[in-house]
Image 1 (cartoon, rainbow, N blue to C red):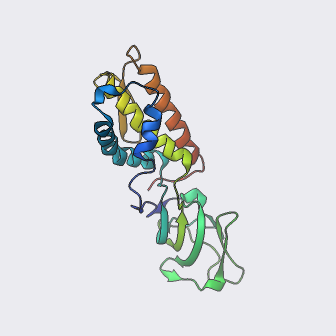
Image 2 (cartoon, rainbow, N blue to C red):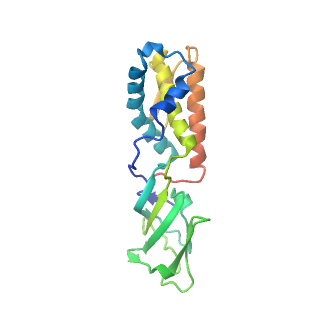
Image 3 (cartoon, rainbow, N blue to C red):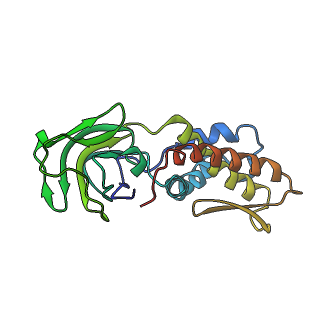
Length: 217
């Protein structure tokens, strides 16, 4: 099942903050940056690309989507699981359209506990007709605040890049990528092992959210 329209800009530009990254960097000597102001500026530059990398790797974003419309592939059954389409967590579903025809509210029922949409017996259609992007649902959904572990995962991506730059490993041959974000390192370098640890931990956290079979747009 594929969802279209599952990404939004949201009210936030980043899941983590500059302070979150500084907390991770407190274990390292970052005096070569020339002061906290310069370091904070560099962190700020990395917040947007790392947030986008988290979204790409997770196949979804972690914003709140209000009055959203999402197109889904029809399943050919009477039930649609929205979690499998990356629409999670659930909030309030207000409209359903199948192949361009809007269904009356008494023809379908939304079950928040299962995050599933079901056609009731006697509805004008008996299934979410199989097709591509032929089911459109109107709803509010998503996270009012990003999950804490996702915020930390993003902060780890930023910290890994800063440590790479600090230890002059940014031009090394070895590299790890998360989404479209790549950090270079040298395992024999000053912080090679730390960089790998931070990136691997971030990747593991993000993967937990993909494990719900969330689909990329």
